[in-house]
Amino acid sequence: MLETSKKQYDILIAGAGFAGSITALILHNLGLKVCLIEKGQHPRFAIGESSTPVADLILRNLATKYNLPWLHDFSRYGTWQQSHPEIICGIKRGFSFYKHSPGKKFVTSEGHINELLVAASSDDIQSDTNWLRADLDAFLVNKVKEYGIDYFDLTEIVSAKKNAKWDFYVNHLNSHSIMEVAYYIDATGSGDLLEKLLGIKSSSADFLTNSFSIFSHFNHLPTWSGILQKENIPSDDYPYNPDNSALHHVLDEGWIWMLRFNNNLTSFGFVLEDSNALYDNIETEIIWEEKLKKYPSVNNLMTEATLAEKPGKILRSKRLQRKLNNCFGSGWVALPHSIGFIDPLFSSGIAHSLAGIEKVINCISENWGDERKLDQNMKEYENAVFEELKLADCLIAGCYKSMPYFELFNIWSMLYFTATIAHEQRRIKKQEPGYFLNADDLAIREIVKLSYADLIKILENAPPTAEEINRFTRIIKERIQPYNIAGLLEPSSKNMYLHTVAKI
Ligand SMILES: Cc1cc2nc3c(=O)[nH]c(=O)nc-3n(C[C@H](O)[C@H](O)[C@H](O)COP(=O)(O)OP(=O)(O)OC[C@H]3O[C@@H](n4cnc5c(N)ncnc54)[C@H](O)[C@@H]3O)c2cc1C
Figure 1 (cartoon, protein in one colour):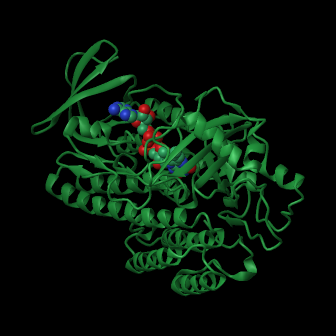
Figure 2 (cartoon, protein in one colour):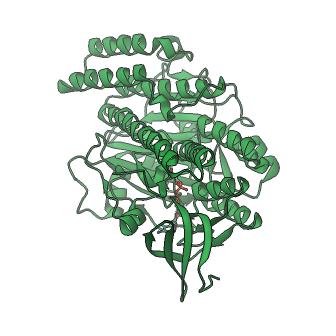
Figure 3 (cartoon, protein in one colour):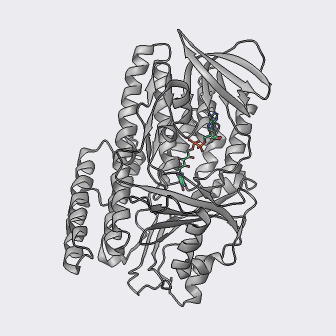
């Protein structure tokens, strides 16, 4: 319960998703007096579940560096199961893509012409995970309380005034109070609160990608491997069971994610390209039904599935792409998911949030008490997040453009895997991590920019010819060659990649 007197803190964090809670725990361990405020109440439904090797690497680093040993266990399926089997998660061995054509059952060939499987881990024990955010976020908030950090849920920040310090005016149930804080961190996962408190605007204008999502959680969703079996589609040379992965069905106009948890629950959602505002006046349920009808093999999967109790309905996002005009200011900073977002196609959100936490904590721990230096360092953080969003935008926009032509999609997506493997390698070799996705690597930025221009040119006369596809493959392979430790685009791989597996 909040008191009516003024409470004083070094740092106030708004938003108790995993990002807000982990940040609170680290700052507390650094000796700062922290308060965490959440407008809702845990456990609550949250979307955004699939982690990656980079997310795991950062989680482990944060756990070691800031003395949160229990956090380490959440970085691999095996250790998670050993220490916290009660917190639901799923095995994620890599990314799997299956291309569907309108009105037709899923078909492929011996050479996996309509499949792409990219392994990220060598076995289930070492595997990445799908986080059931309701469970994990609630666990983290309990840790926050256990560590003695002041935590207030069902609390609204009404306004904020900055003099030498901030005064935050907050409402909790029927009581009002003021909190005096030196620094504010926004971990609310959107730009709304910063706009309300400080007038910081958000925009979607600069992005190449234009997508929105309709999604929910389901029970009893049959396995995709079962469907493949029924259709006699062989999977003997798969690097892993595709149901234990971020399983993506690629459509002409977008894609579907299927993220399975180990308790019969599956996260399932469409992400649809919407440059022409085609869906503006169409009800969510109608879009849902139409898309399922259009792709019979996916429809088959969904006939037996039932909506899970939480959230109990199909949810719809606005346009996913957004970016704040500023990431920081005098006495405040925002974490990546408050700053902006592109699209969940490569599940980069959790890793991006953790990479942002890493940078923000470094800035604060090295410059606490020196506002000028803190701001200088936060400027570098802002550059990083903006460049990261820009690179991710181009990589993802190219995927949407190429979705109707799976061979092109396949080639283009290798640029994403190149960027992420390059970043993983930096971290594995204990070099300075730099920007997420190696967005500070000018060569990678140039490769993506040039290749995007080439892709657009090919698509001017779509469908692409075999000769154009071959030429594009050659060009991309040549460009990524200095980074290509994983045999990307080797014909012998037949779209089944075992070798991106990082030894971590
Ligand atoms: C459709 C979709 C699918 C996604 N899929 C993936 C994926 O598979 N993998 C991945 O890595 N990322 C994914 N993401 C991104 C991922 O959701 C985010 O990166 C992640 O949620 C960021 O976590 P967070 O803790 O920063 O924010 P959030 O999870 O958004 O948490 C913010 C918290 O702040 C609280 N809050 C909000 N406003 C206020 C306020 N005014 N005052 C106080 N508290 C407030 C909220 O209640 C919430 O608890 C996806 C995103 C979307 C939209």
